[in-house]
Amino acid sequence: MVLATDDLEITCPSCKGTGEGDAAPCEKCSGKGVILTGQGNTLLHFIKKHLNE
Ligand SMILES: [Zn+2]
Image 1 (cartoon, rainbow, N blue to C red):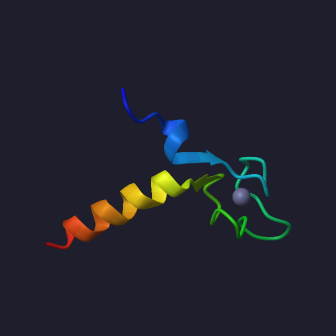
Image 2: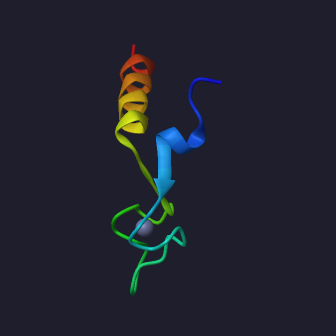
């Protein structure tokens, strides 16, 4: 496999993957617990762009 999940997203360094912020969902990852890498962002933008066609 060329792309592994770890290549696309990494555990959020701000909340350590819990998705919890101080009082609300973690702002850095929107409560997902993971954040996209550059490669993940590229892929996401590509998919979104073509989904609209
Ligand atoms: Zn987070």
